Length: 170
Image (cartoon, helix red, strand yellow):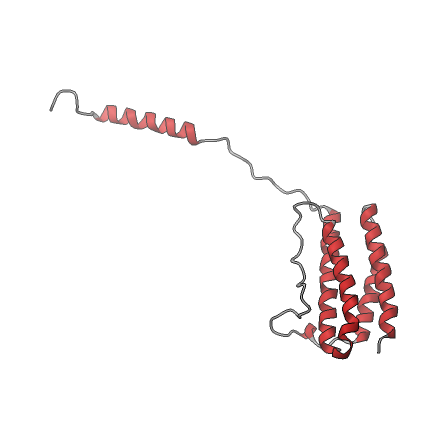
């Protein structure tokens, strides 16, 4: 023993307790409760649904261009209008709302293995899809804000004109 340089168990335990108190005092914070998200906003849900529908329509036109190669150039403006609708709908999503993944800007069909829904698309298929969408638009305005209602009605009017214009293609 060299006179006072020996640590006793009691002093070592005291140092350990003091260090533990200091560390716990520095690192502890009040328990933070995770933020529970509220119910989804009905308008955001509507927008997501409209966006998903427009993405399906764009994909349908891309498949039609592959099926109806002689009409591919004439179908491109229809697809472009649907892409414009898609951009307008995405622009109305609230900040921070997750939008569905954007449709590919290229004219290529989605990659992957063909599915039953990836079969040939006819002009009659396009007209049916446009008519079905245009018919659904008035009901989709129920409960929507005035700006979204105006956009939905405008999109429906464009789709109704597409039904007529597609009937003129041969």
